[in-house]
Length: 255
Image (cartoon, rainbow, N blue to C red):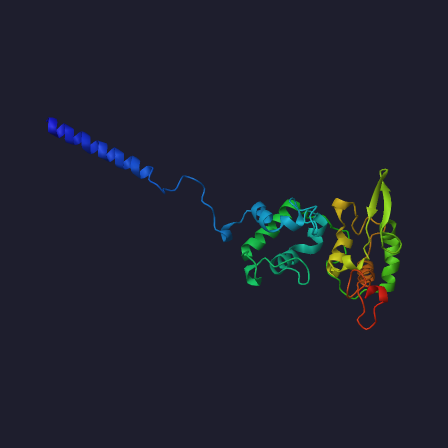
């Protein structure tokens, strides 16, 4: 009996030790949330932070690129345009493609998740309803001369008569508006960027949209197209400081 009891005790002890050892064996995974594979991330906040916030701002505004937390912009651009831009990027600008099919890192569903998240979080279904907003993209060529007149009417009060900038006062404080005809600036922005900014404004910087420049007189689609043509006419082939002409001998003090 004593031998059997001793054997039973040893057996129970071994089973207990074995069970404990399995639960604490080196390398056993801990009870923590599993990290999803990159293509399995569908949370908007995570996708936006990883792919968009660096340029468009942490909360969709006050970034180097256009504010996405702007209901007017989201409505004027529309879902199809946002999907295309996010997936394929904008050639000739700093906006890269994000879809795998275009060389990016996101799946088509993740592109859709991003756009759906923007519309849900920052969009307003009636943002431009009944406002006769200009189209997102120009439907024809602009008239440079007419554009100068449009600029004088809608833009000169802040940007100066010639577009080179102006200092105004807002609630007693001086506000400086930089040049928007500087060739170096124009080399960094596309015609579409100029058009988009003219239409939806820059709320974080106090720039009104197409409805707010002149009281009771919103800009028409043609006026937006013309003023963009006038701005674009200030581009130069080589923006920046004057470059030496190799066909002209340098002055003695420059040699």
